[in-house]
Length: 81
Image (cartoon, rainbow, N blue to C red; front, side, top):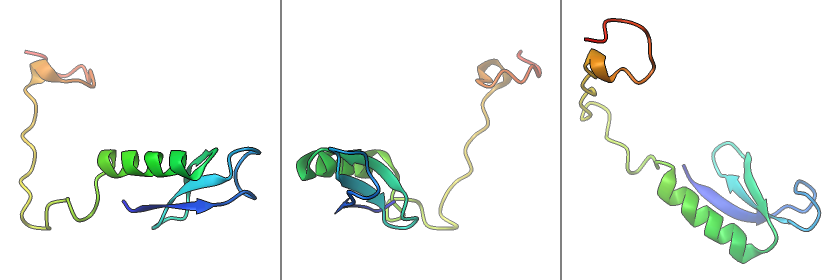
């Protein structure tokens, strides 16, 4: 997802006027004391949040293999083998 840094003192707490904003939804991902801190957070989000450019193209993605029952991480209680 694309994010940008913007000064939004009216929408952030006192002392943290710089925001990282989701460009698609307009939602604020976080507020920061200065532009450098906001930019660092923006870069961290770019690394950790998948971007549409890095997602597989429709039709090229393989369905994930189901986990064997012994690796059921959600504890559904089904056959745990």
